[in-house]
Amino acid sequence: MSTSEEVLAASVLDPAETERLANESVVDTSVFGEDVVARARAIIARYPQPRSSLLPMLHLVQSVQGHVSQAGIAFCAAQLDLTAAEVSAVATFYTMYKRRPCGEHLVSICTNTLCAALGGDEIYRTVREHLGSDGKPLGHEETSGEPGAPGSITLEHAECLAACDLGPVLQVNYEFYDNQTPEKALELVKALQAGERPAPTRGAPLTDFRQAELQLAGFFEGREADLDGPSAAPETLRGASIAADRGWTAPSMPDEAEFPPVPEKK
Ligand code: FES
Image: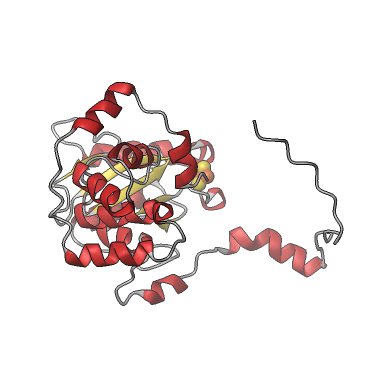
C-alpha cells in the first residue's frame, strides 16, 4: 500500500480543484474540540515527521463526524502544516475515507471475483433491495436512515477483503462475517437496524462506525482487549499447519545474498 507521503508526492489535482481549494474561505473547524486536538497531538507524537500522521489523523476526524468533511480536511491541514489540497488528495485516494456522512454502521459486501462467484453479488443485491426505499435499491455508499442515527446503515460493495478462503464475506465496520448467504446477510442487517450487535465471526466485538474509526486512529477507550480478538480462521492457517505436520520449511536466505543494483534515480 502506498504511504501518505507517496500519495502526496504523486497526487496531481485538477487545476480548477486546486484553485478552488486554495481560494476557499476559512473553514470553521470548531466541531473538533480540545479533546480532539489533544488526540491529534498524541497521533503526531508517534511519528518523526508530522505529515506522516495524516492517515490516522483522517480516521480521527471520521470518528467525530462520520466522514471527512471540508472542516476535517482543514483541521488536518492546520495540525500538520499541509495545504487543504494535499490533505484532500490523500483523503480522496483511499476508499476508507468517506466523503459523505456514514450511518451508525458501514456494511461492506465483497463482490470481487471469488466472493461474487460464491454468491456475493446475490448477497449485495438482496441487502441493497432490503435497505432501499420506494422500490429503489440502495446504491453504493448510500445510507439507509439518518446518517449516524441508531439503526442507520451505509452500504458499499467492496473489493477483495483478503478473506477469499471464507467467502462470500462481508464486513460491518471492518469486522468480518464469514461464509455468508443472502439469508444470513439479511438477518444480520435487520439485527443492526434493530439496534443489535451480532458477534462477528472473528476479530473484535462489534462497535459502531465512529468508534471503529477512533480505534483505527489508535485510541481504544478501555477496549484494548479487542486487539486480542482471533483474526485467523483454521481455513486460513491450513497451509501452515500442513507444512508444520510434514516438517516443511522454506529455504533460508544466505547471509551474503547479492542484491541487484538499485537503478539510479533520474
Ligand atoms: S474475493 Fe472476497 S475476500 Fe477475496
